[in-house]
Image 1 (tube, helix red, strand yellow):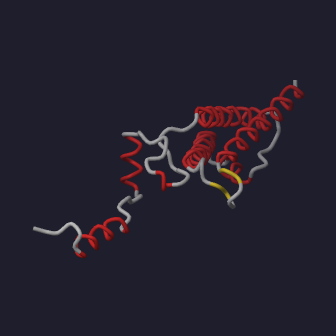
Image 2 (cartoon, rainbow, N blue to C red):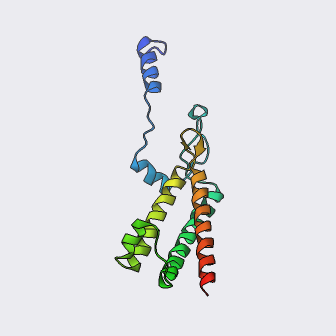
Length: 158
């Protein structure tokens, strides 16, 4: 029978507490995506939780809104190209040479991957100052300004 106060039992208990059992890998991400539950702290010593399963509804609005604005931008860009404008972004101009389907697919893929990364990292801080979620707001506002610019140019053509 082991004594609860023996040095061996005490050493094992300390060893168990010092080893970090929580591992973060792709299995964790996939399992968390399928069975999302975490939206607050489990332990008081965890500090600020960065990666959550449930995000604020505002992030959902920004993500969906930015994708819709990106799709609208693609359609308006194609319309402006028909009336004589040119694509200012060299990367998009290069994909435009391969056809409109390639242009639209590349634009949606790049925007979608960027949005996914920004939502995933929404609570982290960039340069220890600004939360990454602010960049999603900036992306949304950027696309809104681009859409306004394109609409003004299309209305000016007619």
